[in-house]
Every structure is written in structure tokens, then in C-alpha cells.
Image (cartoon, rainbow, N blue to C red):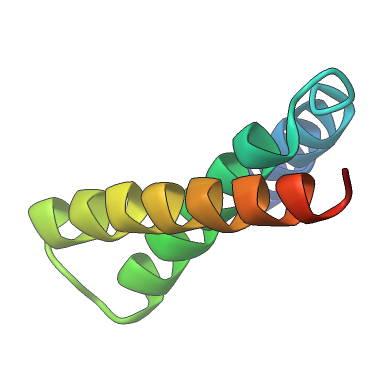
Length: 74
């Protein structure tokens, strides 16, 4: 069971990384921020609404940061 879960997580991570090639910096930041926020919420042991909220907040902050980085490179 544990090997199957690890394999599924690995495949999902690979798919997420390879799917980011045509994204804008803001979109890449949103995906990264949402993943980090959700992961931190889960590690902290939050309830489902807390984890979802952390993912939403992380996505919003990541989008703003990615957009700012994208605009500074122009």
C-alpha cells in the first residue's frame, strides 16, 4: 500500500512539473504556492477547511509573487 501511494505521488509531481512549461510566471507561482500551502496545512495537522484555506492563500500569494517576478524580468 505504501509503495503504491508513493508511486502515485511521484507520478503526480512529475505531471505537475512537466505541465508547467507553457504557464506564465504568475500561474507557476500559484501552483507552487497552493502546493506549499496545502502541504504545510496538512503537516501542521489542520482540519480539512484549514488545509483548503491554506492552499487557497498559498495560491494567491504565489500568483502575486510570480507575477511580480515576471514583470521585473521585462
